[in-house]
Image (cartoon, rainbow over all chains, first blue to last red; front, side):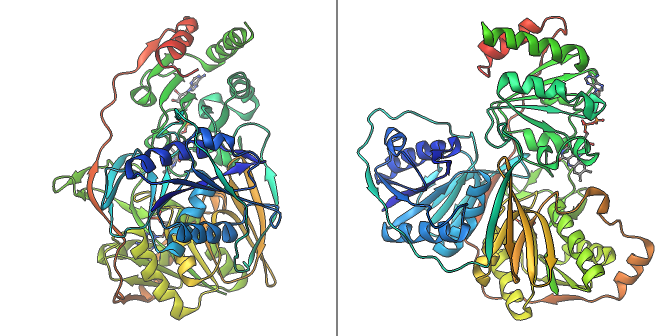
Amino acid sequence: MSVLIYIETREGKIKKSSLEVASYGRAIADAKKSPLIAVSFGLEDTSLLSERGVNKVYAISTEQDAYFNVNRYSSTLVQIATSEGAELVIVSGSANGRYLGPIVAAKFEATYFSNVIGLPLSYKPLEVKRSCFTNKAFNQSISHKDKVVISLSTNSFGVHDQENSSEIIEITSDYEASASALEVISVEKSTDKVSIADADIVVSGGRGLKGPENWHLIEDLASVLGAATACSKPVSDMGWRPHSEHVGQTGKPVASNLYIAIGVSGAIQHLAGINSSKVKVVINTDPEAPFFKAADYGIVGDAFEVVPELTSKLKALKEA
Amino acid sequence: MKILVCISNVPDTTSKINFIDENRAFDNQGVTFVINPNDEFGLTRAIWFQKKESATVTVASVGDASCEAILRKCLAIGADNAVRIDAEAKDGFYVAAHLAAYAEKEAFDLIITGRESIDYNGGMVGGILATLLKIPYLANCISLEKEGDAIHLQREIDGGKEILKGTLPLVIGAQKGLVEEKDLIIPNMRGIMQARQKSLTVLTPTESNPSSSISTFQKPPAKGPVKLVEANNIDLLIDLLQNEANAL
Ligand SMILES: Cc1cc2nc3c(=O)[nH]c(=O)nc-3n(C[C@H](O)[C@H](O)[C@H](O)COP(=O)(O)OP(=O)(O)OC[C@H]3O[C@@H](n4cnc5c(N)ncnc54)[C@H](O)[C@@H]3O)c2cc1C
Ligand SMILES: Nc1ncnc2c1ncn2[C@@H]1O[C@H](COP(=O)(O)O)[C@@H](O)[C@H]1O
């Protein structure tokens, strides 16, 4: 019996959401007294995984694929999970993690639980807590099968240091996958900035900013904080900002440590998507705006005055 | 081209979420149900193919009779026919297994699911359905074009998008971006009248077992009141974020 984790890389480096998966996998492996095995594609350096307590790494080369290959990656994960006798496969809550999860579960004939927060509540049968109703509620789900694939909700467990780094066995090998009728031709990066999914801090603007020409307020603050930029639905519907920045129930979920909402009223559909952010700050002229009920900190004030001041003070602080 | 759009019936986005039966069941008292928004984006794209490429569009739900109102709405929007698989949607695997059994017989070219349902949030039915049918799945699909036999697709990824090429048959997970908000179709009187003439077939479920069950639901704990900071005291906000919230 073992616990298998999928470690996602970007340009050879481990993504933060996958380091969280490693910490989470270690805690489960400790509870189950089983080894922790990582599978990664195109990973340059496995030492970071040893610091997280991974016992064995399958470092698969990506020579065959220039890009993420869902068919090969899922087949490889299932072949290794089977040969290692794994009962649990854990992926992150990233776009690729959530893409692989159900496919791996179907091929592995396992139960699939997405949006899992926290360690399992029990192991036999496996029971987890997961968010549902787009973060408006949680449910406790019990697997009817012994084999389970979990997608861990981003930022719900955290990255933890391991006292003793473990010795790592590295295995490089290739696994077979059937040909797929889908082929990635290219990847377009939206910007060089951090993406909403990966960001610790997200700065978001709503209709209160009056027009796209004022977005430098959001971008300047975001750049000082190293944050991703986001927006409300009407802002992307009107074409002020790209669709990829729309957050909320019908847009992207945000699970950052800090979410700063500027000129966003805080409609229920917006709040649903950002509920799992840890600390929420609102800046709005209207003290009655619903966002004040959901936020931890708030300023009743005009974005056009408050935001530039906030940005310059933070900048001074960072430079100091 | 034969298109299947899988429709999940979900509480309207403004619904208050409450539970009954000692937190074992969702309280649907006073709740309005709507087409899952991601499925509506997918349906809108399917109707486009129906108009431009004379595709036929079937909508299907796994659920009891209460989801027929939503299937009728899909017919009023323009779907050609509807299917209800008469089984309680116990979990995503169970739903996918029933849809797969149905789709297997009908040989659809394109199957559209939503990226995720806004109630269960599994993000799983499409991927499992495709795997059961042994055809490819594209999650987070934000563009789907057909050019002869070639299909051009885009998938939203963290921080960008992937450009892909493929062939049918195929399953996609639709989401915002696949169509524009303004393209969403509001059923008119004519559509609603025509929908009454269209077929809504009820199928008996196949033998299949759910892979999981929900023991209880919980609501998030109540949140404390917001801490207000004066607009002329930004230093205090920064101090609180740094030292109290540890967020900077
Ligand atoms: C089915 C459905 C799904 C939806 N899904 C989503 C979703 O996923 N995400 C989403 O965001 N919305 C969603 N919505 C829309 C949602 O209901 C709201 O309409 C939307 O969130 C409002 O956007 P907003 O806050 O930017 O604009 P508004 O509601 O217009 O709010 C603007 C705010 O800016 C403030 N303001 C004005 N001037 C200033 C200033 N100078 N400085 C500071 N503040 C100022 C105002 O007081 C106001 O509170 C959905 C709606 C439906 C029906
Ligand atoms: N009961 C159902 N009947 C038909 N399709 C469904 C049902 N539940 C989910 N789906 C489809 O699967 C998608 C993903 O749902 P989920 O895996 O629950 O997030 C939805 O957007 C629908 O297209």
